[in-house]
Length: 239
Figure 1 (cartoon, rainbow, N blue to C red):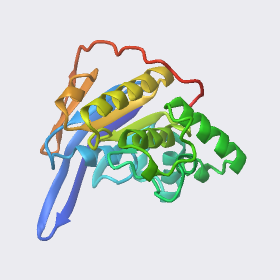
Figure 2: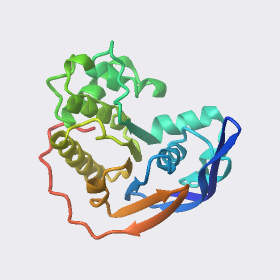
Figure 3: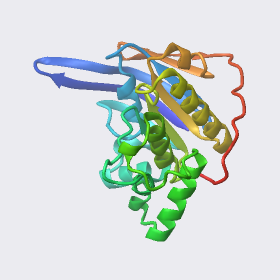
Figure 4: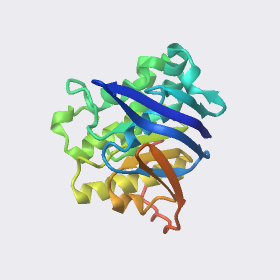
């Protein structure tokens, strides 16, 4: 469970002080799906960075399972990210000189997983997102949707508790967007992940049981009634 209390984030831009977050109080239960929506510059990506331990607040606490990420040493924070938090980025962030399988393996290296086991787990993760036949392809040989599937496999191969997605479909066409959203919803349901996504897309926001609207660094939470996602056919292989 996440519990944010009085979270503020300020940073300097020239002589100006930017107030990215202004006293955020927020609780996200285990297994929740939350979509964070808001205007550009409203603080949504900053909030996601706090949840992922990628940045620290100026004030306040960001607790994950009772541990305040803001007060951990960098070594301990890196360990939490490596073991418990999977992150998907809009731009995929794949290493162009590594194959799909090798890109996924990079998520396991910080945990000291041996090479043979890394290869096996990476192959299983890619199979689970429908890329079992693309293990040895470079990112440049894959479509945008396939590259995002590799990024999803990389985020999930370590079996995290939390999946954070920063505009995961922002670089995709509408048809591919819907495929990726259905895949992510299926994985969220199947594995009981805590799933938090940032988006500017109102279509996506309407599909979330909980919507966090952020504007000028402040958050409003709305519980929404949405139709249950259609079950997606699953490919053999655990993530």
